[in-house]
Image 1 (cartoon, rainbow, N blue to C red):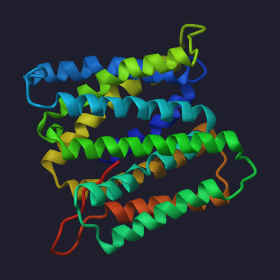
Image 2 (cartoon, one colour; image 1 turned 45 degrees about the vertical axis):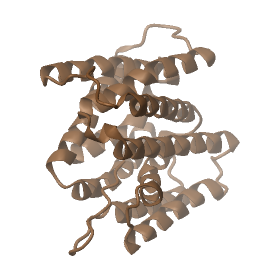
Image 3 (cartoon, rainbow, N blue to C red; image 1 turned 180 degrees about the vertical axis):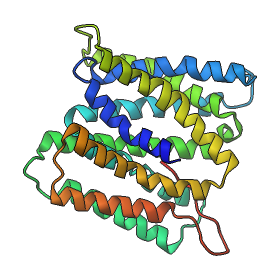
Image 4 (tube, rainbow, N blue to C red; image 1 turned 90 degrees about the horizontal axis):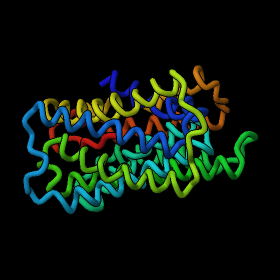
Length: 292
């Protein structure tokens, strides 16, 4: 789980580092196109029938639509805001998962989880609402786009939990999302006028491979395997570490400026996510198992 959290926390930094060679939406398109063969190969090796009829087509198509639009928002948002800010705003997704689980799935939230939601909301409000010297309207638009991406990520999670996709093999659920996202992202890249002006260098190619093969093709599957093997509520308690890793990496690798106001906001968000994801320590209703 620590390895997954480090990998996910570094992902937004990988996007920013590759922007000099590959525009954002083309990166997202290449990422999905590169991850799909990985998922298909793993499914073939495990003997999973991806094309049998199991009533997952409609929710799978809808999940793919959400997945595609989510990454349009995230990757375009990364053009406007910093990796440090993006990783905090993206990982507000458990905030939306918890609210959605309460509203649409009938899951009961503990008092500590409601407190965590309040802390996360306060952190986002502080980061966006308080004027800062290096934050203009363009950066705020990027922040809001990334928050929107986090909300769609949560919506995809809730859709999977509430439909027949919950019974499908992880490879099939992910393959729907990745496959449907390819034309969506490619169309968005085309309409945005994105093109490759030169052949990407070794760093950009390695970062694209990292995003496609490792992050999408493997770590998402590892997460599903862990959830099926171990307690989801205990595993999800680790995910609050992801934005912490992202903030630290952005500061040291990208040299993003960490203002006192945003530092306080990030701590509020991370503390809130910890409370939302913290498993129940006493008898009774188990934790909600929400995760990023």
